[in-house]
Amino acid sequence: MHVGLQHYLAVSFLLFALGLFGVIIRRNVLVIYMCLELMLNAANLALVAFSRFNNNLDGQVFVFFTITVAAAEVAVGLALIVALYRKRQTAHVEDLTTMKN
Amino acid sequence: MASSDILFFVFTAFALICGIMILVSRNPVNSAMFLVLTIASLAGLFMLLEAFFLAAIQILVYAGAVMVLFLFVIMLLDLKAEERRRIKIFGLASGVIAVSAIAAIFFKCLKATPLDATRAPNFQAGTIELGQKLFSQYLLPFEIVSILLLVAMVGVILLSKKDLK
Image (cartoon, rainbow over the protein chains, first blue to last red):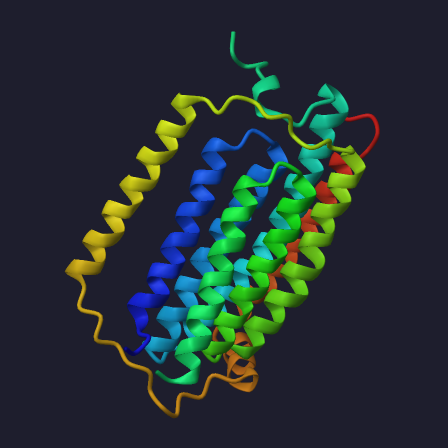
């Protein structure tokens, strides 16, 4: 058996599904954020696999930009979580119900 | 089976097991450590795809900078291990539905697309080629990204001021 493009895509899909499942079922804001990072990484893997199997370097450049934007996004998101924690003293999404009523 | 194929399955199994452990561990610190391991095994997969520069960036930026930031925030917030709350049947059902919807789309696309792409044996994808592409064809996005990082930095400083207006 030879490892081809579809194997890499399957791994990427499985990691993305794990991340999505985590975002939906977990209750801790930080763990939800980690699962989001997992989804971003899964997309990166698909891009690199497509880039390698189509013999085209553009996908790798795209992943480079994705990683940069993800780093900026993590910094801003964590600052938001810290600000939220200062105001509400909680990191559970079930306790953050200001917009419910 | 070639040795690179064996390595592919080793890294895949490692990434998936660590990914599952992110979901099931109660303590956020454990989740963060398993995310580091997942990212490291993804860097291994990048190596197998001959994207060496991206593998290095993945380790340096993700496993280094980003995860240290995560761990700092976890320690700053002093989060206790989550008490065993009852998993809501509604949340679980919506998760299963969302994942199966994505799976349906994925398999439909995989079946509809001919995947006869093969690796060219002498594909030049080193750091030199990537750098040349980045600083000629993609120079404008590269500069825009630097502005984006500056904006993110200013935003983070503003957000973490004591009196948030």
